[in-house]
Image (cartoon, rainbow, N blue to C red; front, side):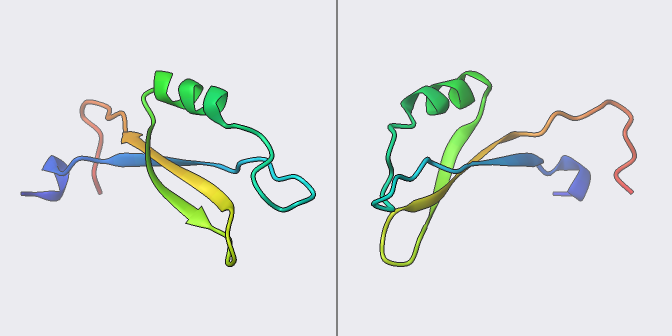
Length: 71
């Protein structure tokens, strides 16, 4: 498979709100639904040492432009 044939991805992160307890303070469901509606798929969580989610990592296929130079 050549590099130009490989699927390209774009990534986005969401940082869940944390309260004074340093645990997730709010349910991220609304944000997750918004990301999903825009084509983002949750692929990974990055956690704080000792517990709690620091980031939610999403990906979706990158839009390609016809005739773009892959350099």
